[in-house]
Image (cartoon, rainbow, N blue to C red):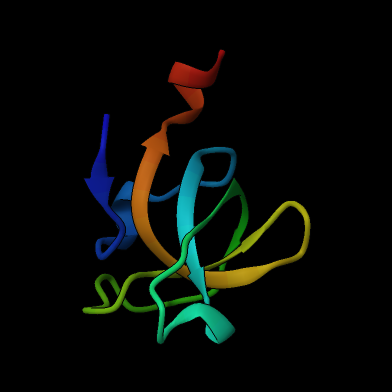
Length: 72
């Protein structure tokens, strides 16, 4: 699957995503991790849905790498 992270309905806890951390917004450098919490309440966001990863990092989803079903 490989889809962008601007639609909240596509993002669920347990999926693997690439996010852009606040300090990496200028460079666009992404960090890969597993979603723990969704922090954006609106159904869409033009810069990506803000999430917290299982390791505690917070950023906006740029790309969905793998769904929870695909990871099993």
